View (cartoon, rainbow, N blue to C red):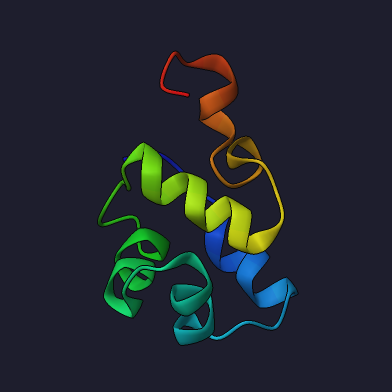
Length: 70
């Protein structure tokens, strides 16, 4: 599982999990699983989460900078 900073960024913006889920067009369960590192989201979901937070995917998932998984 890859490390991510989703929870940190979400809290910095004062979004609840439900608010972020709504903005990213996904379920709250997805947010919970990603924050707990129980699930690695698809590229499409990563993109929507990053857009909802106003950052690039590599800010949330730093390992993306060094991988071909963009």
